[in-house]
Image 1: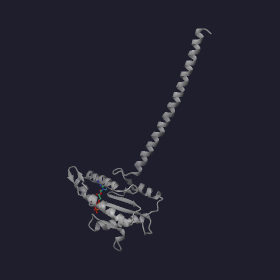
Image 2: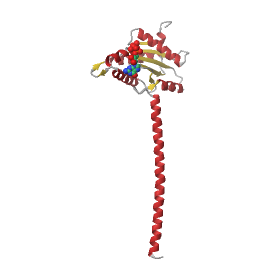
Image 3: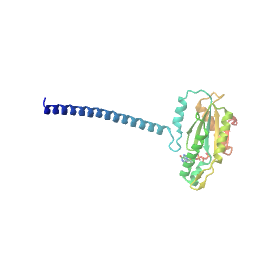
Image 4: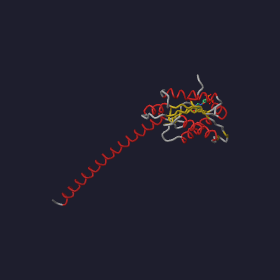
Length: 215
Ligand SMILES: Nc1nc2c(ncn2[C@@H]2O[C@H](COP(=O)(O)OP(=O)(O)OP(=O)(O)O)[C@@H](O)[C@H]2O)c(=O)[nH]1
């Protein structure tokens, strides 16, 4: 074999190696692209899932996801349910504007979340209403916790655009223990207790077992 033949053999094997390398590189790029696409899809699904389950203003669970969470729960230990409602919230909106009302809702949500244990849950139940589930909690402890939360909110600073906003809440409580009722009926009882807290002058806690007859 002369030098020219040797060169041409070397060139051919060189090009073959380059071609093989490019082919392998192409396959790697394709796999990486596919991986990226799957990751993006997973992230997109996660974002959609969070958006569907979360109240956009406060970041708390929304009513639908709270119900799902409870329905999925296999825990049969007694829980206490608290419905917390801001007093005269319409006045806050009317006096300081809707953005001030939104600020109060957001700050209140943070106060509630911070005061709960890891196993407890809170959801934005309605406009200015929050539902709290205290796990493994008897009525006496639930009453103490609700009273602490009420007092904390009463003494908290709510400042908006240089204005001091006086915020209080009313809380109705019902507990699962000793009640042969389903969860919706328990929450309904908590709602009745809240109604009485409002009627009793607001800024107070009422336990469902303390409800007056026929109320
Ligand atoms: N800023 C703001 N206001 C809201 C939101 N959702 C509901 N609201 C307002 O909450 C107010 C609720 O008013 P009411 O049901 O009359 O209750 P309240 O004024 O708090 O009176 P009591 O509950 O009886 O003490 C209404 O003015 C609603 O417009 C929200 O996301 N942001």
